Length: 188
Image (cartoon, rainbow, N blue to C red):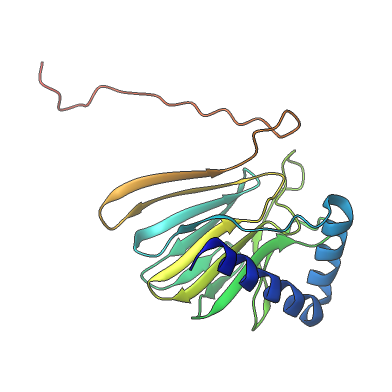
């Protein structure tokens, strides 16, 4: 699936979920009023074919866990089994109530708490997970103002860290600090 197909699928999903869920309609409508028509797919990253768990961080401090072996996305409040040919949207209600939601064709689920005291909250319409089948699950940030981080390891095995964020003066800063250590088994 190319970027245009992801965007088209997202557009149909937005219309469907607006009609289906009052909380999504309010979050989506107020998001558009504030930012304009900027809900778009940004470089989907394949999270299927990974070793459990892929850590998904939204808004710097809100963590979810994707387990590819079970096709499940989990938070502290709930777990959602990802079904084929579904789009899952992650965000929060318009009025911050410290609950991260996941909207799908089947349900609206409160999946995780977030701390509303932090400076960077998850966006009302933060990210999407496209579940096309067991071997085709993709994550994308939808242009959130707080970005996303993915941390995991593919089955090759190759570790990965994916940072979704902005390169603008007004965007929250992100300090990436790498510490290199001597391997404990290094020859002396």
